[in-house]
Image (cartoon, rainbow, N blue to C red; front, side):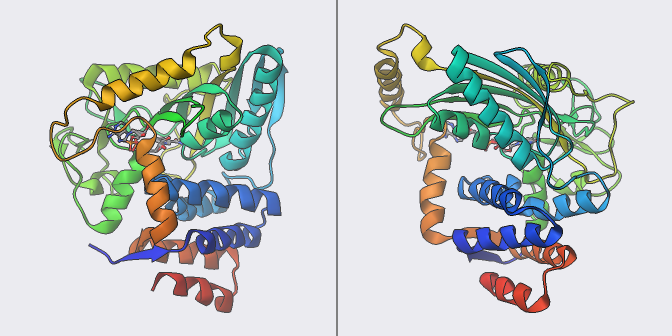
Length: 360
Ligand SMILES: NC(=O)c1ccc[n+]([C@@H]2O[C@H](COP(=O)([O-])OP(=O)(O)OC[C@H]3O[C@@H](n4cnc5c(N)ncnc54)[C@H](O)[C@@H]3O)[C@@H](O)[C@H]2O)c1
């Protein structure tokens, strides 16, 4: 296992911003990317935090990721928008897509936004939190175009992406309720984190290249490649399929099949269909109270063991509080890879040395 460092979130944010400025991003783009990646680490989702930088840099070098793009509206049907992410940073495209959706939901009471051909949009909860901060409920169906990683239920090789699903409910007196997960048993990035730390993953999540169960995260990072399994047996596989069709096909993008495969590259393109609802448009004056009554009721269940009962989103809220206080944990392998990406972006050695010292 490699050494773990604690890095200040604000200094890490400066580092990430500087990397993308050197790579050629506008100040606004560099800030949105840094906001997103550091927030993912703060939320506890290291798989979608600053550890993505080397992969984004590789995608840029390979000509997939395009800098300084903005979404274009391909069809405006009032409450329904279809947007093209122009292969630009997903941290910009998804932000702009949510801003458009929130504006439409304010106008119509609800909105649906199809976003396609966006580079990786990272932690989906970030976009749900943007909707919740504006007072809205949202649902997000996401596909990962042409990047198969997950085997179908009863199948034995990789056929589709880790297709996340996300939903949020804003609370009047508390953090939003947030459901946000990959439909694979574990997110691909979690295999990268385990692989970098030299640790196995728990049983039940991986198949090797022969379709046999394994705990070795290396099967996702070295040829011959294996596959992740879907969570919850046939149910997770069925939800992943709906994310593929709603996130990929309904959004105006592509789904995963032999004509769209992007294997062997660092390109990650997401499609996302988002439904945004104004809760105040419902005739439900007791909505907030009913939600709180339910949460209090489930919390009163006697604990089955050591671990506390949490409500969806609370795990992230607690991580945020702890990591704001204690710093963001980063393993040495990931840190070395991020510093190499900074050098590749053109950061001068003296400036890099100052940032490098953050994790020593
Ligand atoms: N952009 C992409 O292509 C892509 C693909 C896959 C995953 N992702 C992202 O990866 C991240 C990690 O996904 P994951 O599948 O590893 O998530 P996960 O397994 O850590 O599950 C997270 C969800 O479970 C909830 N949760 C955690 N502990 C809980 C508890 N004790 N009680 C109740 N709820 C609890 C969290 O609040 C959250 O809603 C997500 O943010 C997801 O959006 C992105």
